[in-house]
Length: 421
Image (cartoon, rainbow, N blue to C red; front, side, top):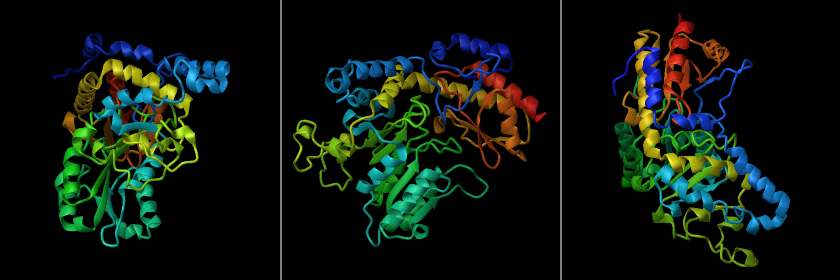
């Protein structure tokens, strides 16, 4: 797509945008004068769909009117409520329904999955992560190593960018596995790096790991609802993601979990279990040995928190209506336009560290500003532009296709230019 400067171009693109009307389906935060913020932090917390309140209110009404009978008699019965989310969530991450379940929170799910898929031996125990992995991932693998009696300093292998580069190179991961593969038990990689926005080749990562008999897991916190990870076809063993970023389910809401179909019927996999792991046909017979359900549902522990799931359902119904193909198409156009305008500033202090190829990034641009500090972020915030600051000098901006516009992007870049000047 070719882009042009000027406000008129952004307005014309918004007029031609087939998804433009979805913006009106979200609550857009406003300042004290009623002017809408320019909101670019869907990569941290997605905005609230206006339908969310109705979905949650339905469950509150059923709870008030039915009490415990709501498990069976509610409009959306609570007992199987998580099943109402499965098919839509599977479409978003490119999985089969048997491979997906919504439960717990992201790092909790990663720990539960590592109970099953991180089975170290004395000689094959190391875990590969990105050198700039999200801190929670690092802490999770560190404590898993220590739990199993290993020294985390020896056990964590970092996949690093090359000198004077910000992005990861897949050949370097191959080199790590060729050198240390016999000592590596697990790869746990962020599918979209939280800092740079780089979208990694999951299928190739799985192939590299599996060639050395390693398990491969993916953190999709910044990928779910943003890119099309095609988890089943990728061949990765497991994945987990939160739903409060691009999936707009509300602060601290539940997470998603993927276990590849090839592991679906393996009841010998070690796991931490709870009563919701048990065969749903006999779950309430009580007083019996665990009969683990096949597929991702077998990693559940407890009955689902309905109010959080209602918020997720509100968002997933919208995603089901729009489809990931349309969202990715607009996302690539929006970030391309954003990149074009930033480059038009011709400011030597500015560098975009996110990949230039739209296919290798999510809907995030990470803008590095030389010699900047957090005062730049504060000035943007004072101008009602909500971005995300990452030390030492990076502004993360995510023009989210469901509710951000081309004019949002134009206005943001104009204000950034004013502040820098």
